[in-house]
Length: 86
Length: 223
Image (cartoon, rainbow over all chains, first blue to last red; front, side):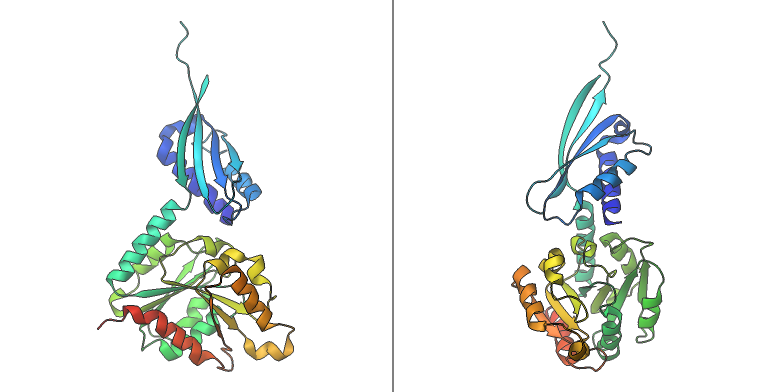
């Protein structure tokens, strides 16, 4: 439950930042510090669940594990159309 | 298609921490001190609170926010010991209280008539440690029926606490609990921890606990 509420909060934070672009978001980078009290595999499972429902369209969590108690979203990767061909 | 990266670096707990700051401001404006009471399930939070309310409830104008996954049994039990409002937060399965729930609960309390707010968190030694509720002091209950190594198994809870209340000490003759070892483990994870040992059943040590409560409230007493 803990990780699910954190995953929902990450989803909320991303929607606030990206607006409708969350549908084109392919990767969400998250740092889960070794001492932050969050279980990375449970968080990954919950994030995949959150990202599989609209407005998300299947972004993948990319979790890294630095030392310390940091727990933050580090980046979003968005897939852009390159525009019409010449 | 090209992939574009947007750097953010935003702490996931930032929103909870902002709300906790709001709670802290609201309480400070009304000269209310708050204690966040945490422990594993069944270590005696509600019984300790019942005794605390019957002795200090009126003198310290104590209000309680009681959190539970389901049922408001604890709030009902506590309401029998005080005429003051005991606000139940049913988390609907969530494993901890967050600052938003506490901020909402404050709307239902008469803060002008409150000097001490006790927040009875959901019984759990893991998740509540991560959520700032806007409290002034964090108190962890540690029952002698648990293993002495609880502080080593759940370090974050003990690292972030100010006080450890060793509970159910009337059972010490019947359980293989080494209190000295337990306290040593507590200090190993957090050398700043302070201790009090109580039996809410027999009343032993309760005066020392009441002094702790008075001491936590004292800095904000209105003159």
